[in-house]
Length: 84
Image (cartoon, rainbow, N blue to C red):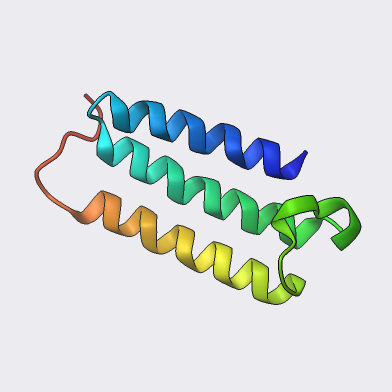
């Protein structure tokens, strides 16, 4: 279930990117990674499903860090609409 929730956000992001709203899509992909980090941090390993790849601390740190970097890059690059 956690993996499905994260993948739903990723699918929405891909739809937004395919509609030429790449900044919104990129932000949503980063948000999906942060969501995966939060779910990995609060769920026990046997309930985390496919988002449990390594140890809890490593997964949380890598998912969260990568998600925040993706959000930062998507919001800081100029030249694309964010809310249109």
